Length: 181
Image (tube, rainbow, N blue to C red; front, side, top):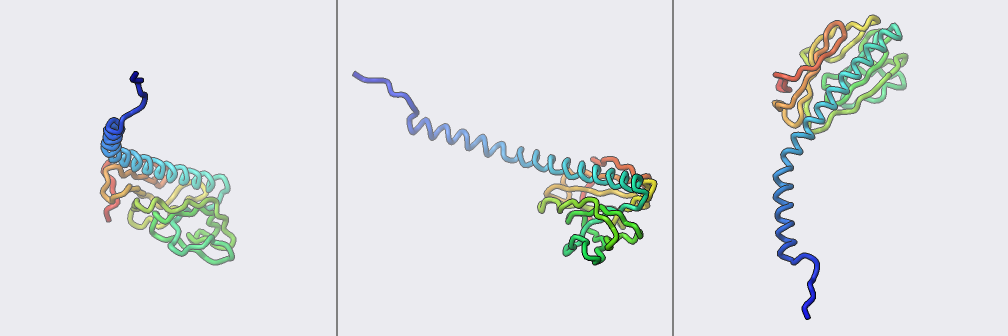
């Protein structure tokens, strides 16, 4: 008497694995675009939140607050060593109370927040001359311009920007932005 066996044959298992492999290969490029889009959204949202925080801190504490990109070999600003702003926003940035308004972290300046470098695959670009953003005691800034975040490629269609106005307000720029010099 023959009994019915339950399970898969080797051929059925191989066909199922081939189908799964084809589906994964077709879905991988779509996932890359989704992950790039999410990285851009996250980075620009953080920029906007950090600049709003810096503006509010300047008005609340009635002092100048500076946001500036950190240099390649920048330390934490402790010990009285002067740490000046760099020009590459992709390395991260610091937000600090800039009591003397010199755009550098001095011994008496309090660092309010630090943001680490962006993903190594991505690029940033700032408007010409935007090596720092300084908010005065009323929340205004003399540094109006745009910060742009580009995922993976300097000409990515997923790039987004953040426009900073002289009033200290920010808004998103989605169209026609890229990181090409």
